[in-house]
Image (cartoon, rainbow, N blue to C red; front, side):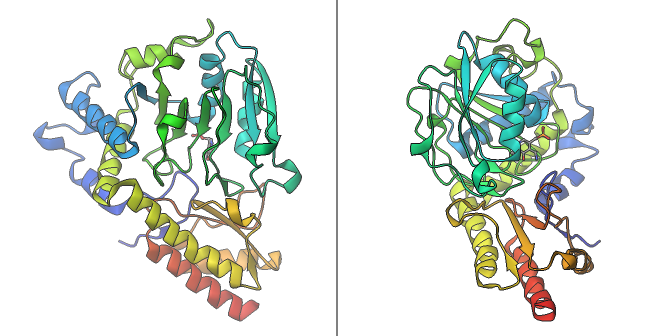
Length: 360
Ligand code: PMP
């Protein structure tokens, strides 16, 4: 068996030990005589699995009392609609910060449900920066302020938590959740798809302050009403059971690695290796402003894009896959989530050095 270094933006690499354990437990989970995939979500075995996953997530993120953790479906794109349906309440509008492709999608969808004020935008910089907080034109009466903490495509990430006063701060953390500690108390709601740092696609995590529950618009689908999901322990409808099980194994892996402070150190070391190389290179470059470079998704360009195909072919021959940049930005992108080992980034940088020496 040969495993590659998988730089995919998501679904993405998972810790090998997690996959091995899942394989061992595939046919008979803990003597139950069943695979987790075959279990009733209402049976005691699966309820135990789901409770443990939730408890571990709460422990890792130090989720304070007064917040619900929901396991939903529909992805972060589903949340782009579910969120305004649940949080607009009686308010006329919500504030959104536009930092790239994923913010733009959130803004477009929210407009179906209410008025959206784009309070700051990085469009002028070609989405290579995060607009400084002083420039945001916030409305004190907005239902919430929405940010995307890490733009997976553009590779820009907040390295600070915006202070938005008394209005609830909402973040799409799909691509940097669990990569570092976060002060959950500063947020009204955090959401994210699982398929980057958490587990298989199909599971969507929502962490929401209790006070924000119970204000859904009347047309909100029952399965997507946060209060109903919360009141039913995320089992109003059948949850993505296998994805929740794998997420629990990943949470255990993160805990064993030393929790989120250790993850933050591991991720900073990987990103520094790659960005320091890009800084010193005359052939490869990062398009993103230094102070908002993502530690998770590293877009980079070759000096001569005619060599892009040769670069990707050479990478694949060396067991490094999914380095092609998103079609909207071109070039390359290395996604280096929690499960990417330092050795993977070291192998990439060694190959980039070799490629530069040959073609630079
Ligand atoms: N937001 C961000 C930041 C993302 O990276 C993604 C997926 N790449 C999405 C939203 C959409 O997630 P999904 O496809 O799970 O709906």
